[in-house]
Image (cartoon, rainbow, N blue to C red; front, side):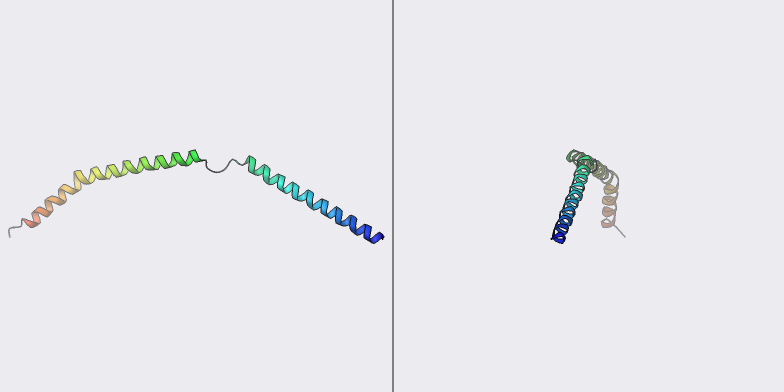
Length: 87
């Protein structure tokens, strides 16, 4: 009978210690989640997307102006000269 009581007490103590440990781990995880200041919010992502779109539009506009003002007239003239060759 004494062995049964001792075994039961050991099981109860082990279960209580396990429950206490798990509760402490859960508490620590919850505290870390609440105090976590990492990550990106929706506003940060939206601002980054808008900046990317504006910069992309400016770069494409600049390339368009360079190609139309400098490159295309030169290519067009060279093509006309090739087909008007009188040799």
